[in-house]
Image 1 (cartoon, rainbow, N blue to C red):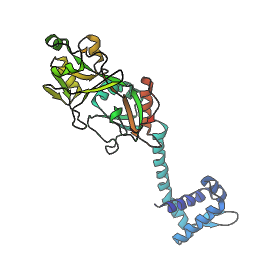
Image 2: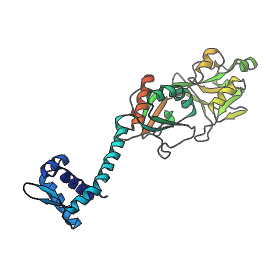
Image 3: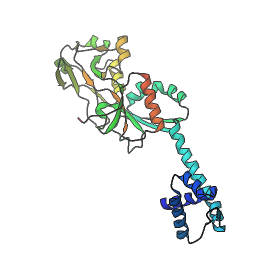
Length: 308
């Protein structure tokens, strides 16, 4: 149904229900003269009179009665459909699809899932753990969760985790068999367990910063893996030295299962962000998830990522 036809039909039904042009015009928020012209144009286009009207009364013709009988269920169905859409605005309801790195799924979102789903029982949540360079728009995801370096610059981003360090670590067993590295150059003599990024196929560089200096150290080793949890396990098993997120391995550092190396030399990542396309109306389930995540820790307000 085209816009003009829908407007004419709505005008006719309003007059037919009220049997009064003034009241019908008030309901439609238009002037009586505009309403009268709309009805006249509608009748001329149909080639049949729908209403008999005098200065004192309005009555339906037989054709008008038939049209009202047939049109009323259609308009009621449209009202019902619009009402159904409004339910998405009034409360968080519907499906929320999130795409995130495996680390984000394991460390940030996974532990909070029972609490979130209990608080919002009408939200259906789908989480896809994916370490490739996925496009959340073409993948029809509502949002993604990644480190800031991996997020397109035209996205709206909400910080979930502050900047964190990436450090060189080894297990006590490995250090019992090998001299502990003290300088960055000492890494050349060690078996280093390296990570190949799924998102672009490159091997993660080992970059260290200290007192304003920034150096990339070329390392080598007998093992390259494409999953940071596999790297973590290999380092725990004493295979070699790893270059891992301090957040990821914090429990191992506290328990002494992994030993930090090289003093104050470490890499840095900008933090973890929830990101989504710019839009005027954020879907209710996504807004609920953002507010829920904000309540879990000190999260900065949503900002557009600056172009590098």
